Image 1 (tube, rainbow, N blue to C red):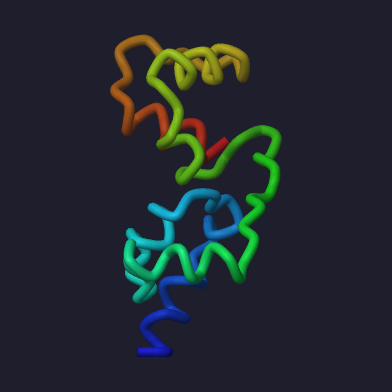
Image 2: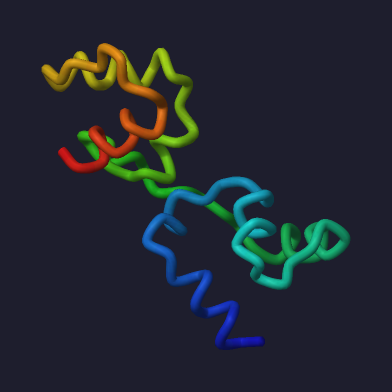
Length: 93
């Protein structure tokens, strides 16, 4: 179990986790009933977003209009691109 938890917690985007749902979805063994115990003993403060934002984890949390605006701000053409394609484009540059 400890090895499984360590593998999931070694994800590069863990520094941006700010919500309990991020720990639940990482299959750390922390469940909703256990969360109040964990929350009282630990403080989660996410790292600031990178500039430019190339984190797929953070980009996936943005609305499609914000993704398009981000692409335009980087002089990229978002015309006709779907959400997943925008995330890939922005995360690679």
